[in-house]
Image (cartoon, rainbow, N blue to C red; front, side, top):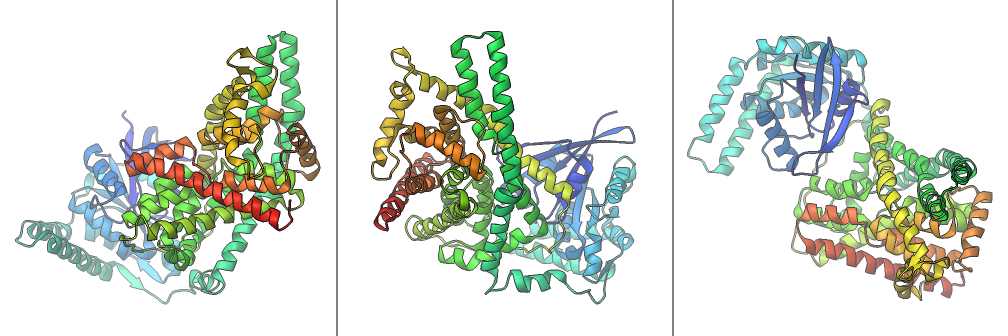
Length: 632
């Protein structure tokens, strides 16, 4: 028996992804749609001895093919022809959601209407007759509460039944389609035709709603009460900073740090000695011993030690997103972003940049104007992505052990402030003749579905692990080779190595910044290839594998690093280096994504050069300003 194909479609914030996660669990594959970089989610499940493949289509309000997401949805539904199309509807906003439903029916795509979030509809005082809605549309209707396993099992039962074979558009829908087709073939211009068709859809939605909806007195709206505090014009921004600070405290102090310390201790106290003993017993060649111990273990160990911290941060951000608060951040930041020449919606790709710059750059396509999209792409590299996090955590623990959380938090704020400042500069120079628009839907506050939160945490963190297992592994081998060889062959003096030559050339640019050693220059060069390589480079150069953020352990780590560097770093120069690492040229993967998104090499070159120049200037001001104030 062939695999049954199911496609989930619907508006954003309808609980579609929650249903997808409930149905498929961990049996998912994440990729890209052919020709575009929008996420493609596919999952698999077996029910009643039938294999079912499920595609989670991008959330969209319409299928007019005006955006990559809309084009993907309509192309997939028309060209791929899935066996079942599930239109996930937010029951508490049924009138708005039925707009997409009518478009699907106009294309004669049979759909299973999933009235999701029925509990929230009841809280809004709405009672929906599924039977009447099914009769009005001619399609089957099922009621669900997305996070309920019982609801999703009901969907699976419908998938494996023959219920979809017995449905076709109702007479009401057929008459609507004939009217729409008459308008399309009429004498009106395209703009007036579209306006007329939209009006016809809403007239039909009003007619259907009047028949299937009963409105009672709603219960007290929890979201409205909470927004009076969290989205209050006076309190919103301070509360946002408090919430973000709590996120970083959880990640860097309360939860993430103990887990990181345990992993760092395992690498340095157990894994490294075990590998060393194994290599000794095998009597491997000295160069292979050095490659594995000094290159791979020290290089990758320096990066892997930060995995618990990064996963904890991703969990917190995914949890916040699940509550509905992330959309409020855009609302709260709108006045500030408008002063910078963007809209509040422009903050969303920047928030995504706290995880990784690549999806953040891709996320800019959701913005409503070309100006906003390009500016967002060009300022995203200033944010502290997960690859920069090990740099910040390491240096903060080494030089500011008593205030590590505050220093790391300040780096995040510095990156965000720099992004907003450069948005202002770009909007008044490169994009001064462009205009922005702002439309934002605020979903209700809700308790996040923990399965969805955990799956999103894994999806985001998995990218870091894959990077560590591929790019950082390769970089560790390359850095080891460069640090042990020069043009004459092998060398035992790292100061005479190829890595030292490359680092010395770069370090000449930083004689006034407090970190002009070849070691820091080498780390900056490798950081352009992958930001994680900054820490792995230092791990290889100074032989540090498991990095801890405990104050006592940090002091020991610092003594190893600083002792080897001959006192090249002071607290002030370390802060200057952190600022530079925070702001300078994005990694080659991010630069490649900029090329894909903009289609022009000029924006790649501009992003690479202007971020380096901005980082150089700000880092110089930090160091020289600190010296003038007596902080050196």
